[in-house]
Amino acid sequence: MVFVYIGIGIAILVALFLLKKILFPSNSFEMFCQKCGTKMDGLKCSRCEDHSKRQSWR
Image (tube, rainbow, N blue to C red; front, side, top):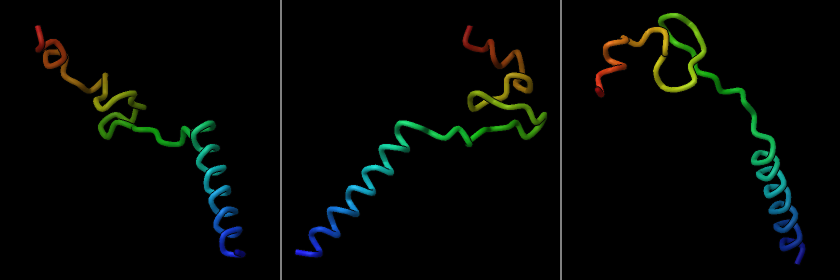
């Protein structure tokens, strides 16, 4: 019976930890361009990307 209480306690702690991670996400992950060093919002740097390639969908 003691193992059941220990399991329930660990499950509650894990649930609280995951709930904290969901409600208060950390924004510590930032991507920087390897060429110019500016912060990127997506996968490609808007400064270093070739303008002709950006308009290639037209």
